[in-house]
Image (cartoon, rainbow, N blue to C red; front, side, top):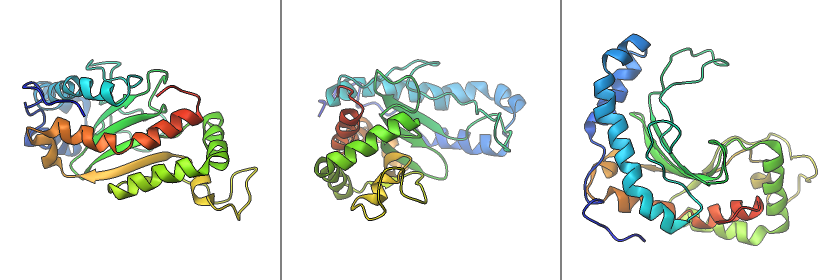
Length: 234
């Protein structure tokens, strides 16, 4: 675990972060957001970028293949704009903060990575891979079928620390797998994501960086397994 430094001892998020997100949920329009841009910068984006910067040494210590990039655009902080092209909900902005420390070989949010979600309705820490394309999904399923013990050890480590596997699943067995397979529940997954709910107050404490790094450390076996399945270094 990374050693705490004076920089890491500084708090990043505050109740003002959730206040802005609550206000945005009630006034989700471009005009309102533009009029409150300074509040977004001061209470959401700047704290998030500071958090990412402070997490950098610890993320690299977990795996030098993971990235922590404190950039306004194109870094670990996910953009506030929603992609509403294929959604009935046409509101322009997300009402949450999303931060992803993904594998450097991944091109987008569908790469293996670690994730922090902040929202008024709940916060959580997550690890794994979300909505992978079919080729990637098949590779993970084959690996679970051929190397079940290491995967089960990863699940046990997660469960012992309060994480649960989440995401979408198929109704029927995936092609090529029998309905009597002992790990059928795991093979039917369309997302391989471990999630742990946390209190927002944890992110406002001076030791928030160490707290998050400790939670991410508990996910190392899952991350290593997914990278092994996809022939990625970890």
